[in-house]
Image (tube, rainbow, N blue to C red):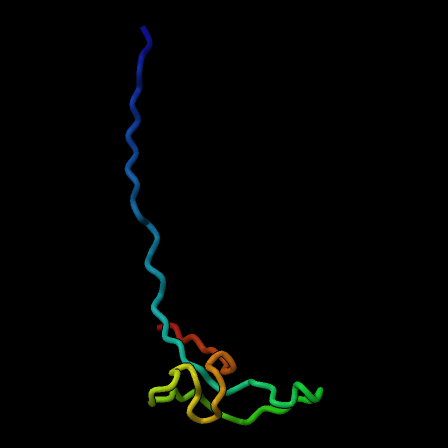
Length: 76
């Protein structure tokens, strides 16, 4: 007769939750002169979301999409 051994494992979650962070979008980095081979940015210093019925991903200051602005993650 074979002997059967049962092993019981308890799994605990030892990982801590990820740290909370806030994201803000800084200056615009869109190169407006790329088509002519140059480099020129508009100088928009921070992303400001449009509050009208249009896309909230467009900047009210420069009109560029949010992806053109530098992403800054602030960990708390």
